[in-house]
Length: 126
Image (cartoon, rainbow, N blue to C red; front, side, top):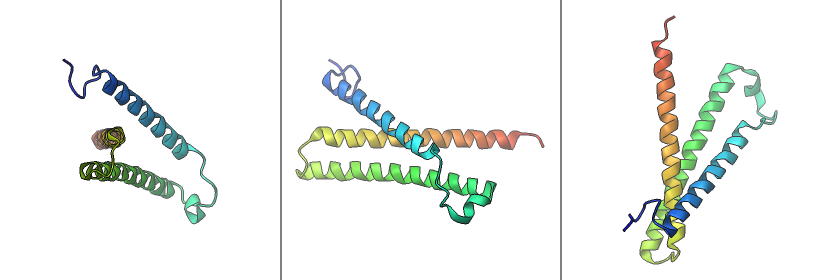
């Protein structure tokens, strides 16, 4: 007998793989949008050099965190609606939970990489 959430769980495993694939595709599209050339309508920040790069990074990071927060909120709302009987599609609830979980894990990995890079920089000799 296989586990409930295992990859070898038959139909549930296939849905998890499909959901993870869709999440990867969505994240790839977001990354492509982030790396796309920005329009020249950014105002005075476009001429400030490294300061605008820092603000751009901060805005990108804030946007990513807001996206994770909204995914988690959506998953919580769908879970509560399912418990109340308002939502009957359990696959939709599980997909939202998986999306929130993957988004959180990706954010955690980015945080770990940023922390590692910061520590490497602090260890550098001047």
